[in-house]
Image (cartoon, rainbow, N blue to C red; front, side, top):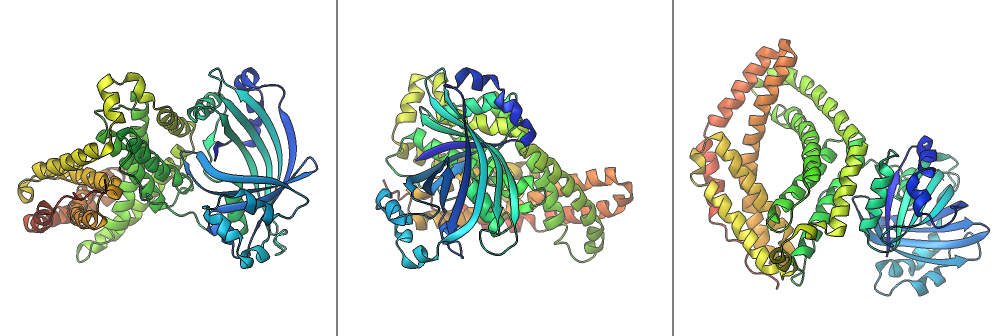
Length: 520
């Protein structure tokens, strides 16, 4: 399994990297400089890419080497993938040699054995890279390969369509050769201190495929967690936190593009899930205050963009009747504010501050740094079987929601907001632990919880809209009358039939059986 961290840098900053004190202090000998020419092959309909695999043949210093990468995942910039490599005679892959290397249980092996795949392989794109390699040894004894790649990815000519398309490459790869993965993030943070860097989430293969077959960036939802009963409490936390960070980082490029509403939403959801998970385990471990503050900063930036998106695209857009005309005037102003907030969010996720936050979080997770301040009792609980902790957490979240939601239809807006937060935490916990329970029980429980959240959610959106419309009127006094009318209309909506509308989803949730049939 290859474990590496990818970082992007501007070409003009490469000399600053080469002169970095860390490389001078930790490098074992002089750096090696290689000229590399890679040919990536796939079928015309990109079957390897569709199965999350990449096959290349590389020429370096007169030798040809084929490499197949498949499976694995990316979380917070940390790439973990299966890799198989062998020398070949020329620029064509040797599938028989690969077949001997790939484990029998790997899905990619069966795919490459299909005649239709083997016969259709052809060049899709190429890379031409100057690679500088430093072999580093840290003070703790970890061995890390630091690679600076600069060059170009080209597509079109190799694929035979005659239209050359290219994209520049300027990136660092830190590959763990020996030691703990946390050391990669320590080296990255040291480099970041002097060189502006961004986390890289796409491999050269992924960038090449996007060049060969252009496609829009898509927002990424949370992937289902696969926990098992034998895991310790600490292992469950690590799985959940990594899952949340993967959702955050997978939407970074969409947010950085500056316009995608859903990418902002999903990145914010990933961040809120992470913060909920940290709260769930707070009796056993604590995130350092400096990282807590950075998560608060990121949440605020994304939250502002999301709030204006909801105002313009949902709350105002769904008004009808007499309020529709005034809402239409306000939508344009709200959209302008949303665009401004998206630009600010894009600047945030491409900043060194964001990079440092993500690297710091990953180093904390990989090193299990919370153990440095844990009591003996906390360590024992972290190492304990997870099932009792899971059951207690789900029950605790349910009790908190039932307590806060007592007499829900009669509660004032601030108290309803606290119910909404409790419902959100209860849902996150249930979904985190879903794989440990009977699927049908989880599905029925979450369905009722979701219905309650939806009813509370639009009411919260209306409350947020009131504050944003007030701010909009202050920024643009000519919109004062329209904003006042719509604010009054929304307030009337909140009051009209509030108790009756909330009573039914609350009653259905309050009588919903908690998932109890676990797979332990």
